[in-house]
Length: 221
Ligand code: SF4
Image (cartoon, rainbow, N blue to C red; front, side, top):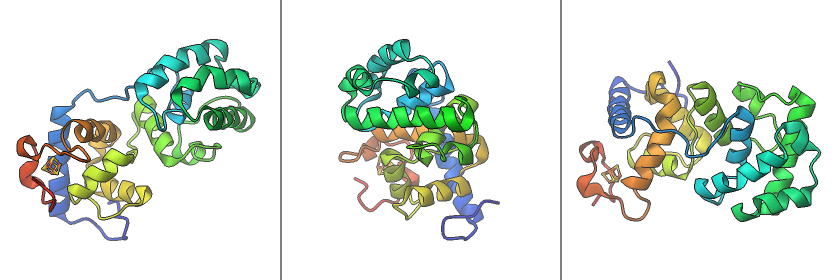
């Protein structure tokens, strides 16, 4: 059995409650997938890397031009940064993102021969790839039981008392310890949709929330 972030084992009732919550959210969003368009692990890795501080729609508009000009990691590894900057300008923070994806491409070519590894420990060794990005790629592409913790997952997990932590790595551990493995790979995307559509940061729709009864958040309206 997986341990929580504090090293304890979740109780039977904690696991039952987390299962009920995850199953209910799965019923609400059965087909939840990333909104990023991708045709290969490499494309999803790059799109996820440049999705920070912008919308998935903006990324989807920018990347076809990027991948048409630089289709493979080898191409991007040798790209002129100014050209890449122009192609991803609309996603914001374009200089920083350009440096980041070119370094990532170079690292991927140097270390893994341009092939995206399907393994968390290997993926996070790549420059600029953190657990969140790696989890998205592993869960979406290979259906691996990974849970990416973004701002929505962090907020919803705390409100629902599935964690008491702010640190994404600790939240990931708490969630993996309580939510059944069969629900891990889609959990993050489902909770993101739930967080956007129901459990909003500023105005949660508690009155019509389908898991209201199991939520004990003091700010519940
Ligand atoms: S009752 Fe409100 S705070 Fe609790 S999960 Fe639902 S929307 Fe979020």
